[in-house]
Length: 141
Image 1: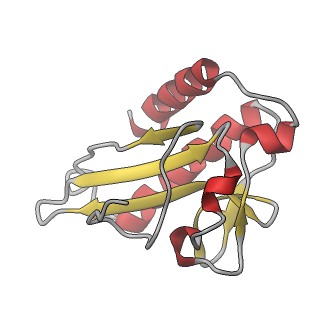
Image 2: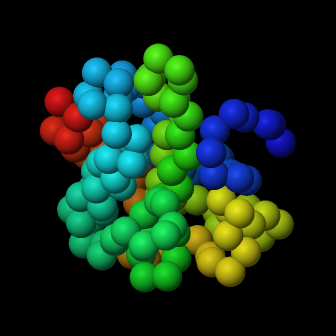
């Protein structure tokens, strides 16, 4: 276990996740932190749609949700200059048992899922990684 200086309470990063920690000068983009988080969520939702996974925002809960289960966590930090660190973790082929002893993102009444669980098959990481990269570039220029 490691302590980090980002929002979101307890999380897990491990095999089967695609983790992205973008470094963005959001001050130069208007400084709207909520918009930045929403753009990260929208980017992941678009990626999941390409795999025919219905994902969405869940009012009051950051991250990306498939039904009532979190499929992607988002936890960011913005320094005094308006530059981001930390980012997102998308559960692709994640062993969901790794979440059993924590309350992911501090949510004790919610559970997590993965692309593999929803699709009922393993998902190759490379196409997901490529699509995340392409979609990220389209969203953030």
